[in-house]
Image (cartoon, rainbow, N blue to C red; front, side, top):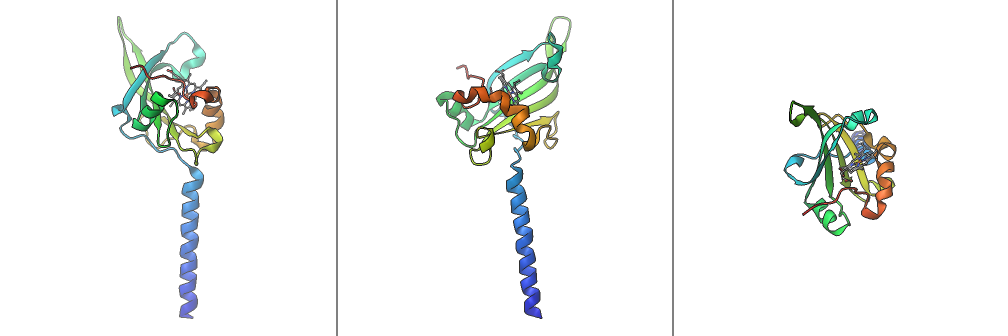
Amino acid sequence: MKKTFVVLVIAAGIFILTAFTKKTTVDNEVPYPEAYRSWTHIKSAIVSSKDPSKEHSRGYHHIYANDKAMEGYKTGKFPNGSVIVADFIEMVENESTITEGKRKFIDVMVKDTDKYKSTGGWGYEEFDGDSKEKRIVTQAKAGTACYNCHAPQAEKDYVFSKYRE
Ligand code: HEC
């Protein structure tokens, strides 16, 4: 009787462990890029108010790259572990200046050729406002929401921006 109980407990343990491991590998969530504003600044651009269809991305965007991604910007081939962030910030038009408002969202690309095979080796995610948890895209939609537009850049490892020395 005792033996059966022990076997059952072990079986239940294995079941729970497998379920947990499966969940973390199936989701392949892009992690929040902590402290990305201290990384290398690649470039900035402003999406102006001229085109009403660009409402979502209107305002500043600053692009930042971690050290691994910097290797990619320099060699053209981004190693696994590369992370690039496009930081979208509101634009406040004052009398004679334009200044930054609130953070709107951040777009993140993470290179992992095993996890993100179907989207060119990059994981894509958009985090809302200042939130580190609120994912706007999720992996199920990354292909249509992000990758499709980056795909024509395949020769440049799917990255549009260039680093200026
Ligand atoms: C309509 C086309 C389009 C879509 C859709 C798109 N991007 Fe981009 N993305 C661009 C362009 C163009 C740039 C370069 C912007 C610049 O140089 O200032 C860019 C830049 C980036 C960058 C900086 C690295 C690079 O390629 O220069 C990241 C990170 C990024 N996008 C993530 C995303 C994520 C995440 C999504 C989905 C939520 C997404 N993008 C959807 C066109 C797109």
